[in-house]
Length: 500
Image 1 (spheres, helix red, strand yellow):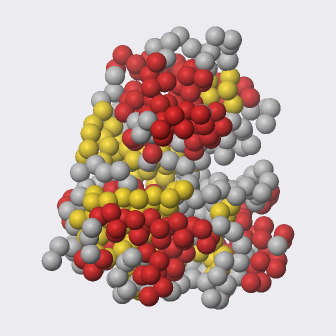
Image 2: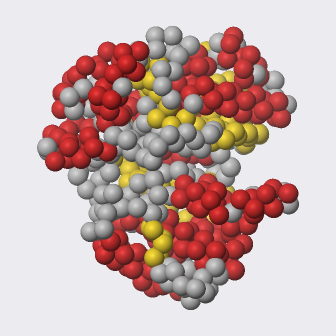
């Protein structure tokens, strides 16, 4: 009997599910958009019940359209965005909306901790920088601003931990996700009273769930979840992982020589090592899905979510036209950018709509507009600004390691050959796109394959289930052009640093 593996991926805007054969062939995919809730500037929330219902609907569609009998699905695993918080009571019911990883309500706590030197005390244990959407800051905000929510809270979960709970009825916190929250000791891979104490959060120890690993079996699909998803009751569900780990696995990242890039809601740029890197100049070190490995990450919400905002605000008519024509609005965007790719324009876009990887408090900006510019010119500047946001992170990573021979590229932006070429030309490094359309879900499916014994190791699973879809070489003739543009991008940030 054939075996299939189901991967689920909950990102910043979409709930996605994909079914794979055990050799990595994508059989069916489905997705559902999750509505954003932004009650005031700087707040970014989602309805937790909606997240589950949309995820369940996507899974049901995948099973239906694939024609695969649910009994042939050997295992399930979930990936999801990291950080933010999902707070539930003793019965697993939400006590508040999900807080997303682009939320900024707790920035004042970060400012205070930085001023008081708390970051320096925490870094040797947490191995990461502090930022407003991490649970340590958000939980501090709830404690002070909405204590009634904390009184109802029994467990603090991450996104995919909540989805796994809805599938199995079992509460657990998976290691890769929790290792990115500044709530545990990444070096030891365990909760640590000293970490909670340094942030003044000793009182939350009892609401941190027991830790599991990516490929641990955490229960089976319940009867209720089976009815909602179409999965067979009892199907094993693995621990799952932080979505950056999922994209790393789907990109074939199993040794120190490789690097991967995720251009989605967040711009993540990463590599793995057997030794944790602890440096205030690095955004984050976390535990990787492969036991004994650490993931070094430079990331920020300066990536494709900025394009999503621009398209939503200024291309709604084109979205309708594209839908009527049976194509994506982003194909339309590519066409518009291609039409002006060689124009002599001098617009700089700062991709800081949801946060900055430069000066604290910096905001999204368009600099250099003139009367002859069209929306196509501005759109090209948005594409370039997001490339430069990633380039900033790449330069930081290269302080700690050698230039890779190739970068594996995933995320929504990977679908655009034109945009990927801009990345390759700016980096002057070849870029490879893994085969498949839902790489986060593929990474989760790889973990499910290890968990249920289809493969003896991650290395074996990755080699069997991942392939390169295409490779794009850098154009050496573009090197100076992008170097000059990036230089201006940095100069604009420096010039505006006093404004924020």
